[in-house]
Length: 434
Image (cartoon, rainbow, N blue to C red):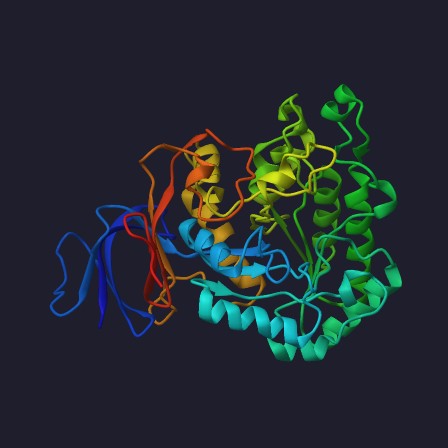
């Protein structure tokens, strides 16, 4: 049966204008668009009245943590994909730092099989660069690619040995696969929980310096230049990293990068004095100067895409305090409202700019057939209410994690419907649809 979504607002990317459109979805694909106030003939079709809400390609998140296998008390593939759907994400890429690590074809197959049977959005897993993410021995890249991995990363830890990283890049290049890097020099971060800045100084804490990230960024850009691999940098957070990426791009290195909402919105100066570990993430919150550098880097194309780095933890773990709690915050269900409210409604960004950085741009740099609303494209679509303001309430999250620093923030731009491959998988009114 066909489905018509009628009376939706659609952004015209040519002129930035918002137009009323109606879309017909059939056999999992976008089959037809109609414009104007005259309704199409919907006889025999399911009809969804968007009532003026924005229609967009489903959001794409190329950096997430689903925790399964091994940490199901934090999140499962089922709960994580449900949370993603509620946040408007239709494609997500989970990192391999699970237990066991996703470093064999069997673990990749496990995730893909679980996602097919229990997930509600598309799941595209990464595989580890090194066995057990220990940095000592490369995994079998060819077998992992064959199993369905979309790239290689040791996210959660940086690859400390430069020769190991160069070998990994050469092997990935030979397979036409990307290397995705968590950039962190371990010798500069041991025992630190927050950035080396105002909060650390105020509370007498050891800090994580900016150069701990930038050293690996610079090293790996040079290695990428030498090997020709597509090198993608995770969760950029420092001015130095932005500067190095800009330089790398200017000389033709195939380097891309990502930034998280929290590194665009928060600095270490905003961390509360009560040491709330819901403000603890890795990379940590940096200075206001770093925040502005990341914003400008995203605006000028130095940073290519926005990701959430969705990282759920149990409330018990986060209650251990800033120094002992694990790094990470959840992000699926707040990402778009945060960025829409703080950047689009204030006039700094256009709506088109934000949507591209979360849809077509990640699809382009990772060569995915998603992130578009062209006729014939997969019907991965969302509706977004741009006008209704509501408060961030972790008690209503679908993720198992409640670890967010944004509790109580009043935001606009909440998704109300998510469709994947032509099937409605979540609505604000009815919840998850399996």
